Length: 329
Image 1 (spheres, rainbow, N blue to C red):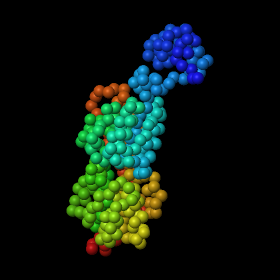
Image 2: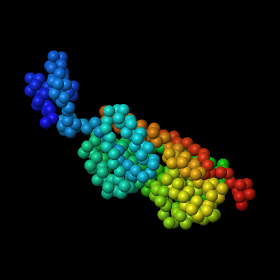
Image 3: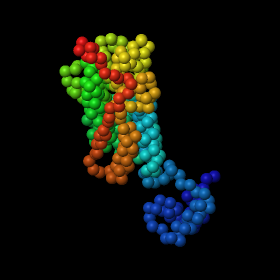
Image 4: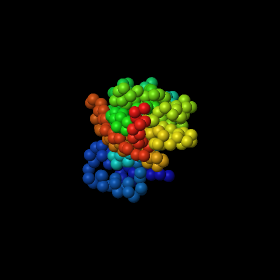
């Protein structure tokens, strides 16, 4: 049988409360008593029960990370950064994903909050019906209903502007847009900034798509429209799906049509041609989110902090300047 707190107390000739004080440091204990208790703990090989300790203190020393899915390569990279930072700060990590389903997200939040001290949360694209009651840091999809929480996000508006500026520099005038879900805050910010910066260069067509490489039939049909010379995808996963469709139908990238993504996931450099994209600082996002949560756990009061991190455009082989005669057409 495992050694219990009572076993240690009896062997050391003290109360169970005194053993708890020695372990937790919650109250001062004489040097002689502390030494005796610590010697018994070492002799008996006693290990405090994490569940019992959490019941006594209300603290789990555990953080939660709730993501929409794990299929998008952006999220595993984010999870790794969150896990590393949590470990450095002395926390375990509970990971869950909602499957981009609102009911599943509500259930995951409820289950997670019973086991963690705080949550790092990438909300499903809608505005949630249920909000966390634990200290929470929202990543990326910071809608107006979530401003009460600390948050970390990329500068999605800047990302849209950078794409538009590069489109102008490359000379493209006939543009197709595979836009992200309309109820996604980040997708909406990217699209609005892109279109505003393009000004008179209105996209020839706009198709709303999920953040997935599996494209709906409406998007496939538009991709094969030879009227556009450049396609902007909602993220790199969508861009990779578009690249696959174009190649399957004999369309060359970038010779026939240029292609841009968003995120700069690891796969962006592995496809042929490599994707031109907007790079999000995913490791910095994960790290800063955990640091914000750690600070909030130490000081529950105070106004929420909203961090917006810069992005940058990365040029690769999926884009090229439009030929002079085509740009004049």
